[in-house]
Amino acid sequence: MATTLSESLIEIREYDGPDYKPLIDFQSWRVALMNYTPDLLPERIKRMQKHTETDEVFVLLAGRCILFLGEGAEAVTNIHAVDMELNKLYNVKRNCWHSHTFSQDAKVLIVENRDTVEENSPFVNLTEAQSKEITRLTKELWR
Image 1 (cartoon, rainbow, N blue to C red):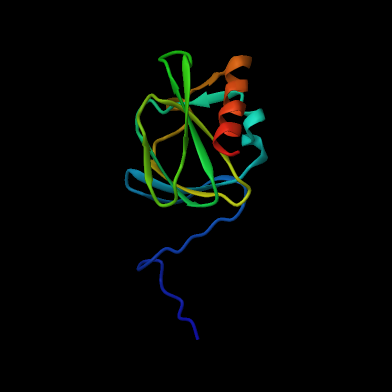
Image 2: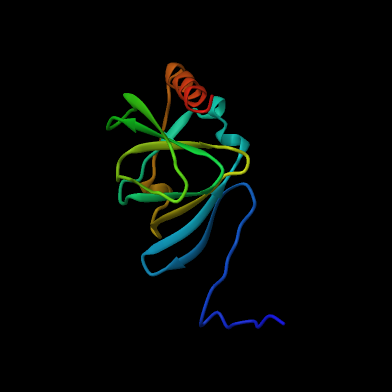
C-alpha cells in the first residue's frame, strides 16, 4: 500500500499534456515541462523569443528536440540548430533568440527564473526565408 506524503516534505508533479507547463516554483526559480505541440512544427515556426533577464536551461528527457538559436540584437540575423541529446543540459544564454521543435514523443525539462514573464521575454517575427531555413535545418538533422 502506497503512503501519501505531506507536501511539506515533497512535491510530486507530472505533465503529459501539450506545450509548456510550469510545475514547481520556489523562491527565484521555476521548473517546467514542455512536450510536443503542433504549434511548433518546423513549418509553423514564424517567430523566436528571448529572455532579457535570465538564461534558460533545457534537458531532453524523451524523444527528440531541436533548439533553434538566433543571432542578433533587435532582429534575428543568423539561425543555428542544435539537435539535443538525451540528459544533457543546454543553457540558452540571456538575450539569445530561440525556439524549438519536438518529435511527438518528446519531453523537455525547463529550468528558469520565476520572473520570466511576457514583459521580459519579447518575440520577434522571422522573415519568410528564415522560416524556410528552420524547416530546412530540421530536415537536414532529422533525415
